[in-house]
Image: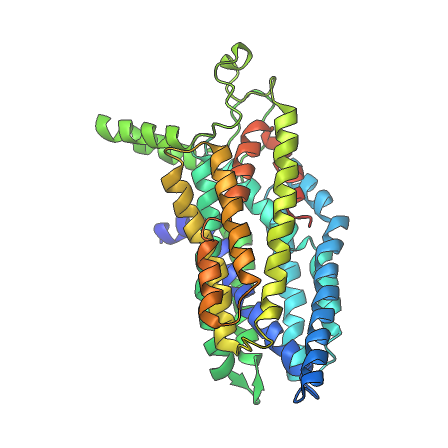
Length: 410
């Protein structure tokens, strides 16, 4: 019982359940839009009209989904900084549960597809993924030491990717097999809503409130994990402690290293001498890169529905799974290459990996070539994780909630 309570107090469990639910929802929505727009698609001109209708729907839907959080996310983040990080997690999850449950009604009662625009508004007005992910990152930062923050943030993203990969691979098969009243996708959406409900319960009851933010210069990092680590270190032998020290040192950011600066030697947080120009450039690079990655990710699901690929629900699920697999490969890339490469090198390597893969994707005509292009992108997500980790170490812990959401405004 005690082990279960500790397990469900981890933010990684919330992220995993949320992502499985999201993978089910994405496949259901994509296939529903395809079915609703498939009228008169037997001719070449009809297929072009179908593709145009799908593209138009997703353009409006994604625009609403990403613009509406602007009006609420910073208020939610500020409230989370002042009171509890849990607010920025369970409020967006409540919006997810309410808004995405409407897709089930659209499927069962054959409501117009335009109802999904209302779901995007409801989701956005409760913070959406922008507020949720910023809350998760801030919570993980609060509950980890500065030395272990890089590996903790990457572990959260690893959980996100693995859960999404498993959910996507299962979603295509569940979409075909699990039906309610002969409506394809209804069973998959029931499963999605169940997972969203479990996520909300775990976030509200399972997560322990992160420690209150402390004044500048003090070590207010939550030491839910630090305390456990300290107890573990006290009972460890000297060889294990030496190994842990070596591991922690390898995870520290070296891009904005101020240890040789006499101002920061007495101030481990480096609050006084922060390189604002470097942080600004990193922030701009992260936002621009995220624009490119998210733009490519939005186009690919629509691309695979048309000729020459023309995928069904099972292959759509597999294709989405390869996208989530990038979280795993990027995590392993950071784990391996961080021993020899600086943060700048890791960031550039990830950007080159993504750009090359998208270049290959532009010439895809066969399914196997699609997966080859995905394989080339194996390090595509290293830049964002590295940039977030570097910036989180250079700002005050009371500013995480306001800073981290900006990476999701694209």
